[in-house]
Image (tube, rainbow, N blue to C red; front, side, top):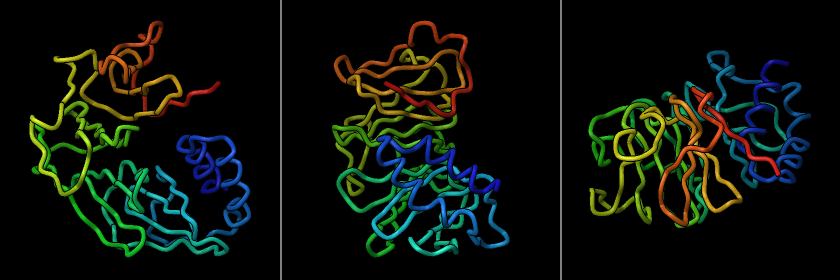
Length: 231
């Protein structure tokens, strides 16, 4: 059905390893066929899936939901605001959630605790929606915004206070970033990551040079909302 197709496509976009993707699909495709969800759920706008040992957290435009393994009922969590992106922390049992109006949300998986880092706590010029989040191999947290550009919080810790001394804001005026509307970040096996924006071309960030560049031959590409690396 339509919900199954949407969730399947989301898994394809967000899973990094092919084996993990195949395993996740096999585990949930039976449940998807007869999945139940609240009537007011905007299920057609599912935009993220995170697997845990006991189930899956699924982000929708109207909030965060949980599907327990072995069950068919989708249950809504206490997060009921507009969500653009969701990632799992590499080192801790935490989900990082970028939303439309409340900034960056830390969601504790173990005790369902919530910590919110609001937009006015971030070193940004103005409060604008967060469209994507990426935790790199150096534990820097990257925040793609709809209008402010791409923000890097160095050695991220939610208890830290961030300003110009421990962060950097990449924009289309101080870097090769294609546009200040940043929609997606995808990690690469080639010592860096891809950046998708509203502007012309696909951007590339190199860990070696710590700079953003534009991939050759990609200038005809615009409005990049998802990137997948193969091979």
